[in-house]
Image (tube, rainbow, N blue to C red; front, side):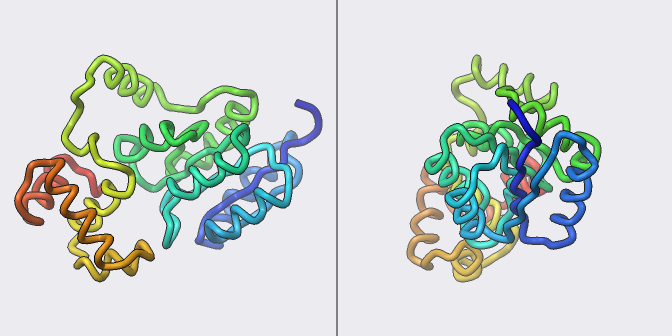
Length: 212
């Protein structure tokens, strides 16, 4: 790759974007740095310009980061995307990689590892931690997996929001979907996980530490 890297940062918090920009600006091989505050802005910028990598927050409001990741990969299949998240790896990392992410980095580790992660994915590699690599290896040999592994990305997000105590209407507002759609997701979740009510779902989420 010739020239300096052009990086697009996607995060709805200005302070986070500023911190990421500063970290990247200190790297000699990083040139232009763009910013987007939401998924639509990100998609517009991806369509308008040629970026070397996207740093994408998974916790965007409305349509979440996983949905935006899929849209980006549809628009630019070869564009590397690094998922940045406040959630531990065991909650979203494997889902992000399956959706096409080039790597997964927690915000806690971003200051130290962001530049290395960008260099890794722009050179054609994947950036994952040793512990995540081990989990991926286990998944390849364990076809069953935990009950929540059978959920789609949207269903998994609805599960977490149910467990956080939000009513169906609140989840609908949060995800910019209809109440009827959220109720359908809830029914599918209960069926797939063979549970009867929200209380059982909440207990499962707490036991498996899916909200941390």
